[in-house]
Image (cartoon, rainbow, N blue to C red):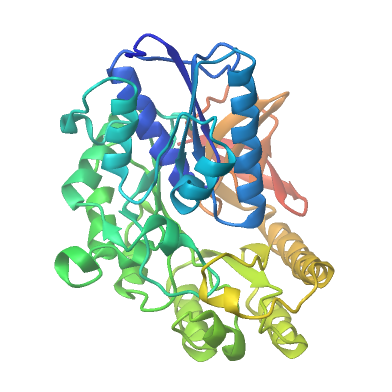
Length: 436
């Protein structure tokens, strides 16, 4: 039965990589004359793009599926389809536990997954539509996924189980997609992947992220390029020079270190020591002017002793990351660390998380006060009440801090020179200096 002309709602859960997948599916469905809706009560069919990264994400995905099949049972929608990481990882179990879903799709092979979804909806998939996207972010920035999967053997991570081995997206496909985004008014590209620094290894036999960043910077209309998910082990150091020397590439890098103790790093199978990790971080800070370094940490890992945690505290206090996030360890099925006794109580994990976040709050206050009376090129994301809200090069959308500007006449998606006159823990307040 062909469902064309039926209304479809896509629900996206999880990270920006899932968001990009949903944007591709959205564009393809539109190209085949499906009507899209954001209102599940107006939808005939619901497609849920799930996340299965950690326990909280799995719970949210399952709750969303259950809600959708309840709507189906009530006759409010016709069909429920489930794709993404949770579906790929637990497809057999989900089919048994929630059989009301019409079809579960995996995530390890995106073209085949998309083809399968379209086939289920009664249409033939045409490869010439690969790369098309319907932006669900504000139109001036977009996430650009340059690879799929991951080859790193991190003990705590189920990404390789869900997403498979690392596969670099071909450069011509990346550049075509980026040019299409620029033609739609995108000014900021946010480079993402499970491990962006591994890009090119499977194509060229060496890591070529630096060259790719340089090629992307030549695209007319792109003003900012921001690098996320840069794995520290085997980091291609030529990327540092590219960031330093190319004005379009933000002096910003997201490099998840997860921990600093050699004891924990070894058990985590991160492929790097404290000495080499510290050396890399110091090189980034010393060579890139005014760089903003973002990282993420895991606390409560099974092998993390009190001394390991104190070592992590001391490092966070010493290095003073510009941006920092902290996760509590989550025991994931079929990972290497799942074989370790999860001996740290949840309450202690949360206390350690709170300790690190409190330290980071004080660091953020200190750094934000240093920004007062400085002027930053600021990209305006939106307007709320009397404030235009934007970001400097130091901040990625949705996860980092923002600049509040009480001015009139500014435009969303435009750059302005903003002078900072006040600061709080995680927000800055500025005024218009002059338009670029």
